[in-house]
Image (tube, rainbow, N blue to C red):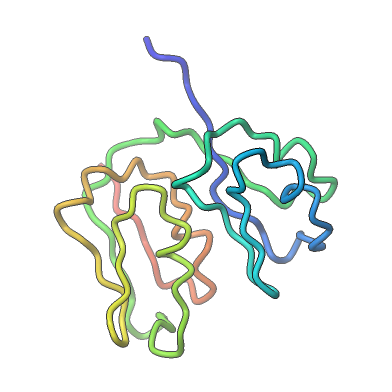
Length: 135
């Protein structure tokens, strides 16, 4: 049986004080802070969880990389704010199943099988528009 691996899924903006401890502790430059926005760059993250351990505010949430099988993703167009420039779900997804359209977020149906249902996209969406559908 493979050893369970955990990955950071979201930096909770309500708990984060922008102190920079996670940013400074990350050896892979996977923590991105741009103004009031902060996220984990999954192309660089190795899942070492150093960021979580150094955060005094418990702002970094983690989940199992083996969380489950995804059947699909539903984005509520009425709640999605992509037309005003939001792309938090795109930035948060470690599987890269989302892409930015001109005024909407596009789900790459062929990549949905790569989704491990970590729900980082759900947690990152400020409008609660994203719903991961699991088996």
